[in-house]
Amino acid sequence: MKKALLLSMALSILIHQTLYAQSRVGYSEYEDVKTFYKVFGEGKTSILIINGGPGMNSRGFETFAKQLSNRYNSQVIIYDQRGTGKSILKVTNASNVSLDLMIADIEALRIKEGISAWTVFGQSFGGVLASYYAAKVPNVINGLILSSSGGTSMRGLSEVDILGRLTQAELDSFRYWNDKLNVNTEDQETRYKRNSFMAAAYVVDDKFVPQIADRLMQVNMNLNRLVFNSLRNMSFDCSQGLSKFSKPVLIINGDQDIVSKAEAIRTHNLLKNSELKFVKGSSHYGWLDNPKEYFDSFDRLVRRVRRNQLK
Image 1 (cartoon, rainbow, N blue to C red):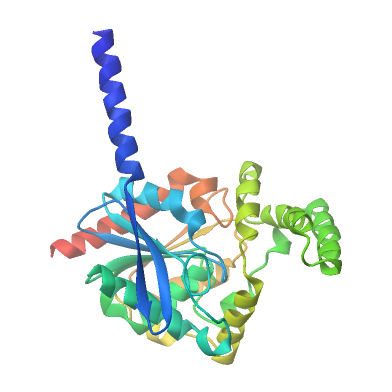
Image 2: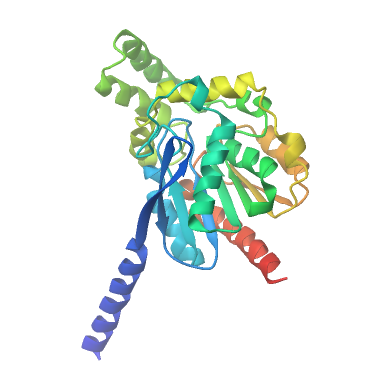
């Protein structure tokens, strides 16, 4: 009996690990850009993850993508936005970095994979891009998750407050290392120490600070500036187009988020088919600080999308 139980447990672990590790990679192309992407799992439904930044690659979202794939028996896709990670952009300048081009990259990926419609998840800046995508190409999206999103306009982006989430001691340390970094911008050890104190704003549970600090080290600041310049130059505001979006939407923020509650409420009022959730005891990464509450809300959105697909 004991041997049978141990064998059953071993098989269960092996099956879980096999499913958990299942992935494939590819490139999609739009004009002279090759976009690297990775697909986790299989299933009749697809979820696209648009990570934050701008200027960060998608590598930090691999574990999250695997979680979603296993939880919802779906294929989950992450990708490196143009100019980041393994995506190929030969020259990075103002002529080839814009939200419209970033949307074109997403569409090229969707078409390459033969996906007619997918659920789109946008985290932080990824929520900005996801909102713009939903406003521009609503017919290919069957559900939208705006997770700690920067918002639907420059107003929301202007209300992001990272330093305001820090304690005085953390803020003093951040400023100390930031001043040192301004003297020597190439010193990676100093950059990491500065980022470690800034990372405390993004999570409530300090055990996740090293993980967030590592992610902040990925930022391509040139690309970051180009994207924000593009947003300012276009006077970014997709609220009018997004107001026509009728598919299920989840707007989910931490109750101690660096993005404003006011922007989340404005977006909720804009999108009539939306649920608004403030996750307790959480900042910018709800699935780390309070996974139970975060995924309960995510579950409801997925159920709503799937009920619509059965109609």
